[in-house]
Image 1: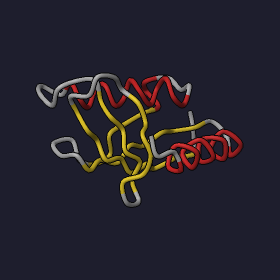
Image 2 (image 1 turned 90 degrees about the horizontal axis):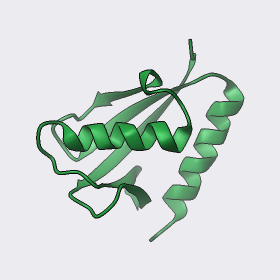
Image 3 (image 1 turned 180 degrees about the horizontal axis):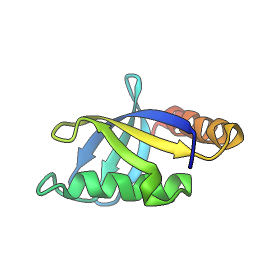
Length: 99
């Protein structure tokens, strides 16, 4: 089982045209979600995005905090310290992107 946890603060913007990371919102990563904030659809879209973005199985991604709000914390379980470092580098690139 993965032992390296990336806790990723998220500022979610549901109802966007597509799901994508779009820079920083304070200390959080802004993620536009191509799903409405009803019946857990936005949270599901966020988890789907993380699975694809970090290349991990769905069971290794969990919503740790903020299921009902825009401020969320994702937990992404990675297999190694190297994977964790790579994930942090990717997050830093997204945070620097002001698209």
